[in-house]
Image (cartoon, helix red, strand yellow):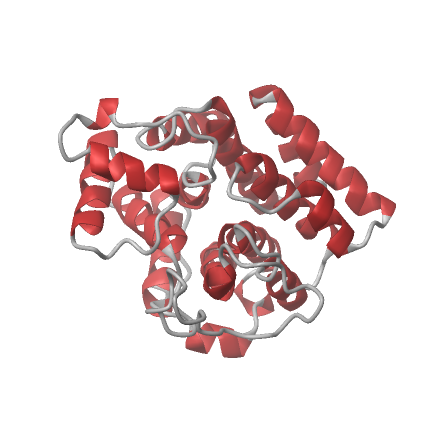
Amino acid sequence: MLEQYRGCLLGAAIGDALGMPNETAPSRLHAPIRGFRKAFKGHPNDSLTPGHYTDDTQIMLLAGKLIADREFSGETYATALLNLYQEDKLRFPDSAVHAVCERLKDRSWKEAGVYSATAGCIPLAVPFALAYTDLIECSERLVIACSVTHIHPGALAGAVTVATLIRLTLAGDKDPLQGAAGVALREDELLGVRVREALRLADEGISIQGAVEKIGSDSSVYQTVPLAFFLSSRIKDAERLLTIASQTGGNADTIAYICGAYIGAKLGKSALPADLLVQLESRDEIEQLGVDLLRRTGCPIPGGAE
């Protein structure tokens, strides 16, 4: 199980770092480039070097550590997020997260959340899915956490859907993508319909470029989550999935973050490209978080992994 926990976290971070230079950019699916790259000059991420991740992985690590240490609450998360923002260390945050950080300067965390359907709270899904093995408890705790920044039902449903996908994958469910799609439909009808349509397109054999054009790749959960599900269903190889997902343009970093978390949870750390693991920022820290979150569940830790 530790192999899967580490794979999930590392896969998410690799996807995020691969997508970093392509965030907000046009799709590169016509000529995908393998490996980490630097963003073009003038891009919001142009200060980052190849292998560095965005705010998605920053939020995953921030929340994951609080959860592993049993210190997570709406208040502690909001405080840590605001500190990162005020220190000018939060990397090109989602528009809703940016707005909430500004609001947190003069109001309570309970009043800061914004009515936005962006995918900015999706990164929280990964550490919560790893820490809480019961899906109901996981979903309830995740919704409270996401509400610090997002109060739109679609955004909350998107995070629960991704957490369900990870949890079902770790549990060995025979079809976690369809299982999570069912949860999406219950949580938010529009999201559920779009996710199921994305899976139908994957089964029908539409081209990847055609699917991106039909589904969309912007920062809304109504495009980010369905496209990640389409790609995860269509592409079985970890390296190819990470490469393609990270070059969809638009919200490429989060799309690849979701795909990476899924394929890492499914196939484990050993399936991830070894050269990308070597180049990934904070790899040791991410791997240790996998140990700490698995310990949080009460599962035994293999010897030598402490």
